Length: 207
Image 1 (tube, rainbow, N blue to C red):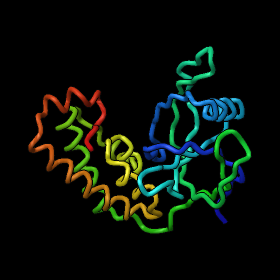
Image 2: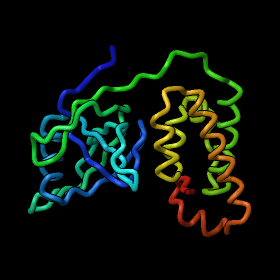
Image 3: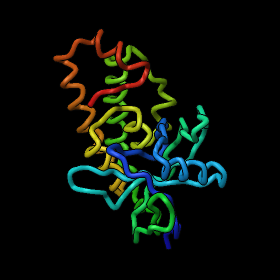
Image 4: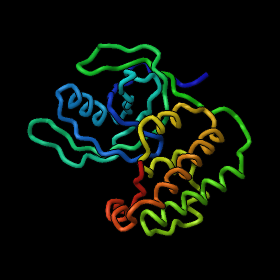
C-alpha cells in the first residue's frame, strides 16, 4: 500500500515542481509564513499543487526546505526547497490558516527501462544543454539522471511538467521528455543563441 500523510500542508501555485527540482520560494502571505515556519520547525514536507484556468490539480509534488535564505523581521521567508515525491490529494482540509490535505504518495509502476528511449533523451538533452548554455554535460551525470532530473533543469511550460508529474511510468516520461527536448531543439534553430545563453545562467531554460 502506498504511503499516506493525513495532513500535508499545501501551497497552491501557478508552477509545477518535480522530484529533485530545486525551487526558491518567497513566503509573504500570513498563511504561508505559518506554513513555512511549521515545516522548518518540524523538518516536514509540504505540497506544491498547480493552480491554473482548470483550477487546482489533484496531483502535486511534495517539497522539503533545504535552506532558509533570509528571514525578515515581519516573518517573511526566502527559502530554497527541493522536490521529493509526487502525491495525489484524497481530501482537502481547513484545519490551519493554510490549506492542507490527506494525500497518497504515488509510486511508479514496475517495468523494464526502455534503454533506447533513455539513450535518445540523454543525447537530445546534451545537445540542448550545449547549444543553450555552451556547457558540456558529463556522460556520468546523464547516465545517473532520471527523466524527472533532466526535466527539472529545463524551463518547460507548467502543463508539460504536470503531465510528467502525473505519469507513473518512467518510460512514458522518457518518451514525453524526448518530444519536449526535440521541440526545444527545433525552436533553438530560430533563436539568437547568444541571447539564450546569456539568459540561461548555466541552466537550460527553454519554454
